Image 1 (cartoon, rainbow over the protein chains, first blue to last red):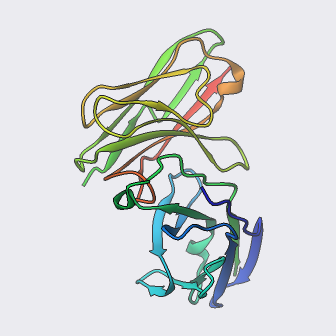
Image 2 (cartoon, rainbow over the protein chains, first blue to last red):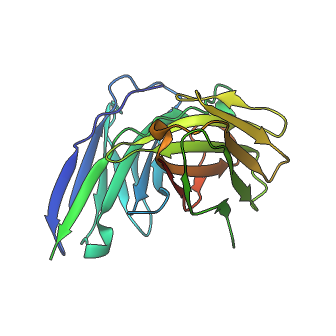
Length: 115
Length: 113
C-alpha cells in the first residue's frame, strides 16, 4: 500500500478556499486516491475519490497531477463547520483483483477554521 | 437510513473484565471492519471481515477477538481488558475491499481503569 504524507495541521479564515496536499510518491498504477473527513466524536465520512486530473462534487474538488505522486483536496469558501480532520488514503479497487482491506488512515490534517 | 450502528456508545471497564462491542450494518455490505483511535492518532485497523464467514487480523489485533455473526453483524470482544485498550472504537463496512467507500459507525468510547 502506498504511504501518504500530509500536513499535521492547517488554519484558515472563514470564507477562504483551503487546499490540503497529500504526497504519495510510490502510488501504484491501479491505486485510487480517497479523502475522508472526521468531525470530533464521529466516525470518518467519505468526501471524494479520484484517479487522475480533477474530480468535483458538492463538497470538494480533488486535483491530481499527471504523475499522480501527489493530490490536493480543495474546499471552497470554508465555514466553521468545516473544522475537522481530513485523511488522505491511497489504495486499489477491489475490482482490480488485488484489493487490500488494510487501508492506512494515518494522523490526517487537522483543519481549524477561524471566524 | 441507519447505516452502521454500534453499541454501546460508552463503556467503563475494570482491568480484567470482558465485554463485547456490537456492530450491525443495513447496507448489505460484504466487508466489515473494527478500528481503534487513540487521542491525536489516526485510525488503526484491529480486525476485518472481507466477507461473511471470514475474519483476518489487522494492524493491532492483540487482546481482541471478533465474530462475523452473519452478513449484517460483526462483533469485537475484549476477553481481559487492559488500560492500554482505552480508546474510541469504530466499526465500518464497505461493499468490497480495497479503496471501496467505507461507512463508519458513531463509535464506542471505552475506558479501562
